[in-house]
Image (cartoon, rainbow, N blue to C red):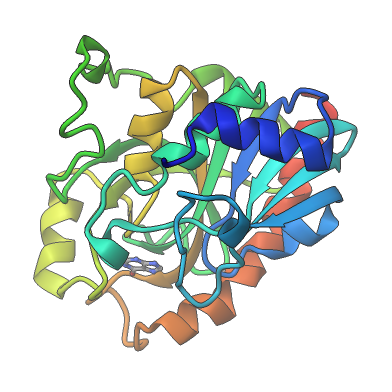
Length: 267
Ligand code: HPA
């Protein structure tokens, strides 16, 4: 019998304690450092039946429950992507568990390519909205009427305002923009980038959008931040690679960590 989110929450609480978690953080490629900063209990995804394998290098598949800036958080050190196993709902169980643990909100992070010259590599971009350019949806097959999730203001305005206030307090500019999801794992062609740029996207990546949809389905408030690791295909002479993503992500991650700490201290 597969374990339910309730079973997993009980298992996690038996190791990490029963105090409710207030916020979830999902860490993207090269952003794992934050998980090490949390004082608490780390549990390998491998010990949590049904959790994804999250086998992408640059991810650390552990769930860490503990305190960061006085807030009880659940940090997901790795995410599963659609491109790994063809499952758009790979993060559904972890997000269900997060809700069972008591969280009301989740902050998603990712590494992304930029289509805006004013948001260069090393900068952060707060997602104001997204375009699901993959055409896939993690709720396909969900039988309940709850599948018809409204996606207006999916990127929670109040959470975004708090993140903006935290960034301002840290003296770090935080531009906002629209993120487009291509499934990957191949990077995009320059023509694909021109297409989504024309359609109003500012950054591109291979994750996050299914998690935003799932979080809204589960009633979690959600905000997402990209660390820009490269200019998108065709926008600069630089070669795009996963190695480059992993090398560049920590530049933005250091800024993101400051913003998140300030955000948590006021949460
Ligand atoms: N495209 C898609 N995903 C990415 C990129 C990109 O240019 N950079 C980091 N993740």
